Image 1 (tube, rainbow over the protein chains, first blue to last red):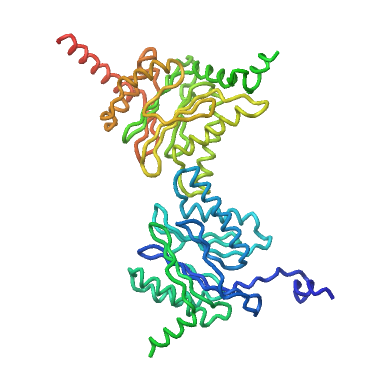
Image 2: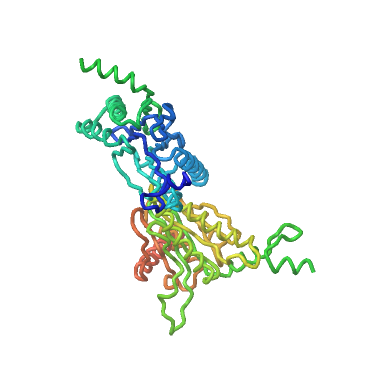
Length: 228
Length: 248
């Protein structure tokens, strides 16, 4: 029969949505000195590793970052559109847009396409006049404010590391970066759909900066050596 | 004829005027006076209250309208036109809160109102709004603002201004008597607004409606007794000043 029909139908013949694999691990958390954003860089198409060098952090503007989970095209397209909206806001109102407003713009944009197959799970991270901001926005229409989010197939492993690492209050910037890096590494260790490099960003009052890019295989050797 | 065509709808005249807009500004000049003063910690709007007929309910004539918790406005000109503008502005204040999760800044809502007014100077089949408005309030960060809009859709920020009938006289009074140091005191700011209105309003405090807003507080419309208190104090100060002048 028609191969496309078989791929898109359930056992009983009814149509089923095309399953995107959210093969990724992205995380972000707020701490005393801002927001840490850490992501992996693997893209998978089924069991095939399409790329090990995907940029899953989208630089919306010098003080706003967005992460990518779900459909890569959906994420990068909508976040670029968000960047355009944010710039227009800045020009009209002569001040930077708040993280709350930016995430709301994104959420409202994709809500209009709810049910039409968009796949996007992103974290909007930034620093505005109320301090560090972190929002989770997805294509289902969810938008939540929070201090810690991990999104993707490797998120559970990442949560384990960050939750235990955040127990001590008041991390320094270096400690927070190490924590984010470790969390992504552990996720790539156990989750087949995450891997490649860990891209780490730090968002502070002056904006964001790219802290590091570390290959997980090298990190593995480093952590193994520390164990010994 | 070309000339009568210009005056019917909003198109340019040969010498570059928008006659409909200018006629709208004439309508504004016929409206009752409104004055606004921006102090350091308080913003004040005062309007001339026209004497009300015996059987009319005084409270239904409200020329000062709250747009949101932090912004309010007064207007001069066609009351019916003002109602439309005020309604749209109130909805926009809430829409802004919904999409941006912050209250409007005074400048934003002024810009919004001005854009509406400008649109009506460029649409077919519509006439411009016959109102000028004074918009006052505090931004989220606590800075006070006073803006004035007119039928053409332009807006400017002011420290103190007046619109409507006798606006020129009142503005000259304000220019002469506005002192930066006095704006630190709430009472002095309010007194300046009342004194300015008293210049042109017949029969004193009875015909003045006054609203004030202090930082982080909502708009307060003063009751008649409070206005009378200020008027009495002002008249006393005037007497003292006269006596001093006579002595020297």
